Length: 152
Ligand SMILES: [Zn+2]
Image 1 (cartoon, helix red, strand yellow):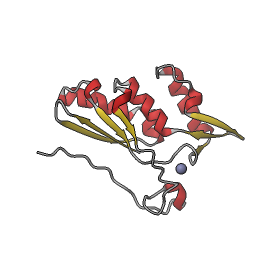
Image 2 (cartoon, rainbow, N blue to C red; image 1 turned 30 degrees about the horizontal axis):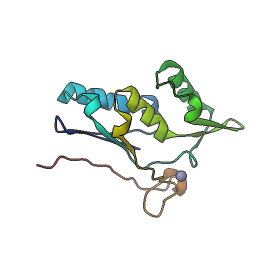
Image 3 (cartoon, helix red, strand yellow; image 1 turned 45 degrees about the vertical axis):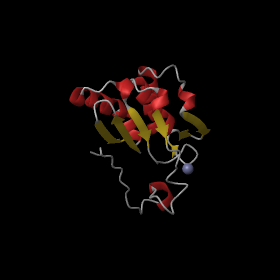
């Protein structure tokens, strides 16, 4: 999942990759903090986009992944968002994980305003004809890249 950032006031951009491990490591927050440190960005000025990735409907995870998100939610402050908003138990030790919502929560906790966060709402697994999906291809996939730049 690509995360894209622009700071229109400081004329700075940022980009990071947030799969489930990156989400647990709060890479969105790390990117915001890096932009603050390197460019003097105020998180409230940042415009962020959560790019295409697997949707909650397609993303089944096991206990080892679910447990790390429960631990993150137990120790972090995500605007009181209950863990049930991102993790749905399916039975048999399986869960559905909503990475879009989890990353939105991480960005909001880092000070990005909710009205400045856009979720593309495009699932890679539902759209394998034009996006690579690890799950849809059974691992026989390519990659896709996300780029952001400032114009003169
Ligand atoms: Zn999907």
